[in-house]
Length: 142
Image (cartoon, rainbow, N blue to C red):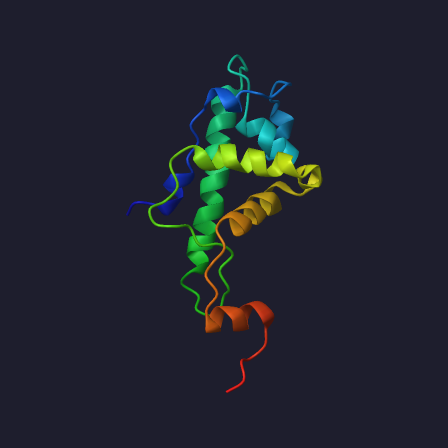
């Protein structure tokens, strides 16, 4: 089975090599969005670069896999809906970093919350009668 989370894989690009400090083991697991960004954008010469990029890839893919696991539960409201075709590999980590930096208060959010907020804002699910009901907790009048 090909995992949809593969679309969120990380590809190191020059734009992502802007971290100012070296990644340290104490940043794993990341506590805040700021920590996650530092892990996802290590300097090319950082001795922890490979570990950081691999961790970042797994973190993003893990968020998608958790949501996909919930898709089998009809009563659960989906947090986000990835488009088909999936986003290009590497594009989402760069976009996540831009999204987080656009509103500095996001940087102090818990890392996992920040990843899910990004995905929910970037890929909202279409509103359906059932989805609207689930989102508000109210039944639609008949």
